[in-house]
Image 1 (tube, rainbow, N blue to C red):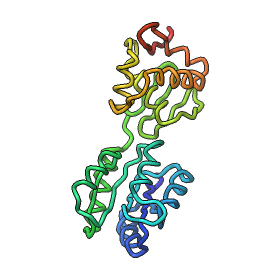
Image 2 (tube, rainbow, N blue to C red):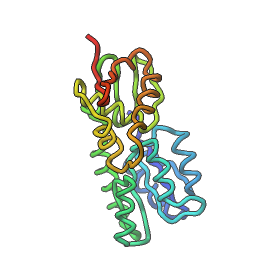
Image 3 (spheres, rainbow, N blue to C red):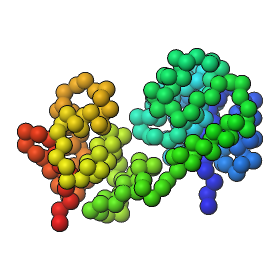
Image 4 (cartoon, rainbow, N blue to C red):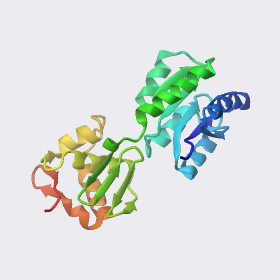
Length: 225
């Protein structure tokens, strides 16, 4: 079995080495980055990072900016490290989708325990693989395969397809889709749904016909018999 890859991002080499040493003892494969820009390059090059340990205060791009960029495309678990114990920072981290938040100085053993706990929570389970009508959704990897071939979807397109599949056979209004896929924080025109559905159908090929238009209401995902 391949070792899980963990990306450790910190501008202090001493801190990276400390964290790496403890993780390697637990049989993790550790990849290092010394600033935010390098972290993003590594993450999108490797593509199989299981978890990111991310320092907040760094040159070039800080931890918040790195987190925002990665969260547009991935739900990879992120543990933030910070020298601050500010509740406001912690709340900001959770708003951005951070899984854990650890203030420096910290015990490396505690960090490893948190890493293992987060990986247990987010590990791939059978429930995260959904197979319907030749479409296989892997929620953990944010990956979609149609008839065995992977298709490239944006983060929102994946979320939209997941919502459709989860609510198979249910008539969904545009407002309901916005509220659930855009998490109540989108204040634009509901027609953005139509744009995303059009792109999604195009990428799905013939399977795009599973997304039925309900005139005057919205959409329904239904697999043809």
